[in-house]
Length: 210
Image (cartoon, one colour):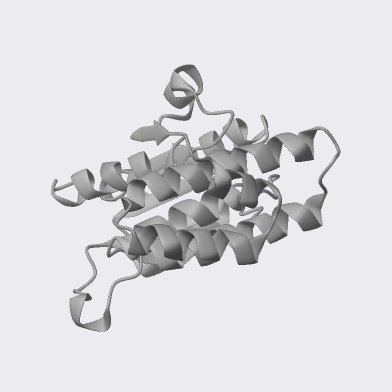
């Protein structure tokens, strides 16, 4: 398998990443395949960070490279743009400063036709609630990488319920600490560790009345 794109992402070589993406798009490669190659490269970046070989600045750089590559892969000409499918309120939960996974998902779902309101990182439950009340999104998506993110997600879902919004918004959670057991504890509507699967889940929800 040709993994040059994955390697270029891992090495934080933006020029090479964008060049390879353009070449492969012109050659007719499936955009989903290119997204997967970039995702694998981001996983390797995360591993290097955990080993202490990469630092926060490298993670930020990797995130920017990923976003710029996805803009090319998911680009739609102006005359192909359609009205927004729905509104997604998104953020990395309180206590967690990681945003690579969140940014990948945000880029993909925005390119798929959703309006995205990204609250950023370290977002407290109250901020999710206040913005949900004001902006009335159909979907609230929470991301996290650290183990503590599970508790923050649970607190946010509880806060949404106390505000009387639980039956008015779909809740999606994702990230390394989220599995079937933690998902049940959080009491969200769905979980995923893959951005493309998250987009598919949101598309399914938009066709369902809450």
